[in-house]
Image (cartoon, rainbow, N blue to C red; front, side, top):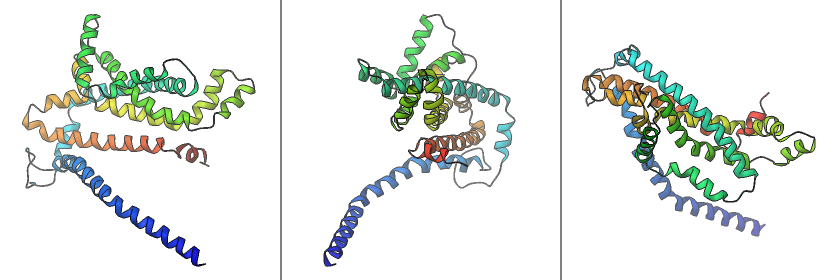
Length: 283
């Protein structure tokens, strides 16, 4: 009895020590989050301010900037372009990510690590370098700048995110399910369509939402590769040259911030380890 009580006391002291040692890390995390997100919160705050200039004190509450934003036809045209590019980019990047993640996790091939390194390289190369390089390439090939070239550039930077999301999914479920399907006579495509894809579908959906958000918010690549049809970030960049249009830009930015937050939250929720089990347990 005394040994049990002594062991319990030792464990309590260890837990208390760990909590005390982690306090500086917790404080640092809170300070980092505050530094990162508090400035962003001023965006929706000033979008409801009844003044042209973003400054304190606030003049009053108004929604007229949102009304002016919704009445802007060029804004809706740019929004449509961004949705088209984002949806296409997310679809193609996710498909490529599925095949890439399956190849990396299921097959032995020479030079696997260098291939993965090259695929992930856009994560560390500055966007302006990629944008200039792609601009030179499409110009040399005689390809006109358009939404298609923007889509190609966005696919390049989205595939690494798709693979980073999908590789843990392919590694996280029982491979014996695929082996059992093959033993029952199913070919590789049937096994993938009926067994593998349903098992990794939460990761596929998370990859699609994440890639769509990346493409929708991306500016540098679109700035170099867009033609006469601007995407929404380019439209916002052009509006910032006119101070009187700043409030409606703030309203638009607040809407984009809210939608992006929701999409990223859903993508991360689907990408969590228990997502497959929770979806399979639905009534």
